[in-house]
Image (cartoon, rainbow, N blue to C red; front, side):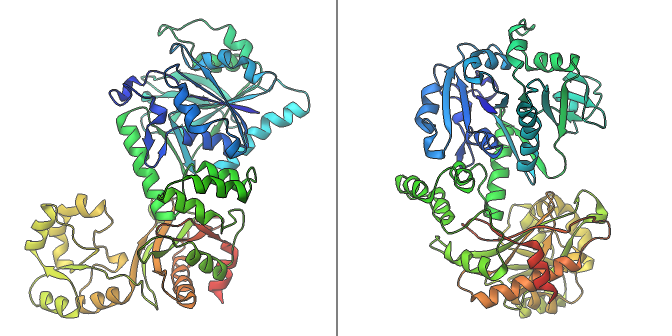
Length: 518
């Protein structure tokens, strides 16, 4: 199967950002936007890729990506003279597609989530197995992504077998809450179908019209992208910002780079270490270069035991500061449900190596007790007012129960930053002395995020391996003990260790669980 990235259009929704440059060249956090759709095709094991763009912008993409040989792939380029609609790409790319099936991804769409590679591989297999059997007419496959505002999108209705029943374009009354993102798989008949299309009222060849032709033939399938998947349309300033913030959060928390094309190529064996080193040597000193350098040490296809992972984590340190060692655990829970929340505290035997700035919201004699125990700040209304005015020079907030009604008005400020005191995290207490001392010594509060993951520090890069391993064991043991009764199937989905500025090193979750149980 071949792939097309449509990176054309006028980018009017992003004006004036796109007045002089293609929107697909704009940065999404630390990479050009086009890196993200390219990474999707590469994750789907597609190596023959056509980029379609405007006459003005095509040279930008050629200068950026070349012929793709440095990534072990083949990239070709064609021009869309006018913004005549998405479906025109099949006419422009007819010679490129030839007798193959084709995957189309829009250049401003970003996908990321656990298990996404498997979803892509299953979609490819559906078409390629048919091709092997000389049944090169197996229809089309689109995707459905659950949204709360389906009226803003193209919507797909389907049965329990994944057969599409109807398609709607921004309906007032939607037949489902599944939007259709910009990723499509088609058999080779898509070229013939595109040739039959007539321009819509917008004077464009619509991709919806292509999908409707497959629907009429009863050959339109849908795969749903559910829990754990993220999809961003970066064609608006808001969408661009949301995507950038998401990428920044994932990369800095987990140590994994999203849409690192060199990493994908290296992991899949499309380029060898020699080529990776050549790429690294051409780069100036930057975080991206440091990340690629660390890849030389790590086999991304391997699941390490804990001690190996700790050793590798230390070796990947490239920062000039004392990096934090972080534990990342993806859990088999749906954090949207109250009965699947995982939240608690753990006292790390060797501490975190980090000085925690503690604010205690309390009154009376408890203020002096908190300060004597090591709190950096302690008080009542004075500090509540300071927070309302933007002061956030602290890492942890502890409160006595009597102060919680007053803290309620700070929910929007503290809650969004994970700083709101809570009894389950041990930060609402009547014993401020003991609580302050515990958190100063290395007690850590944690909570599962909306993606079903927990992230917490377990030491510093200058810790001994034994100290990091001991902290890891205690932290993971506590997470396991908090498994909700409503969690079904495998609880520890993925376990990884990373440094603040380093790549994630995957630990075998079965080995990790067995180690903790000893």
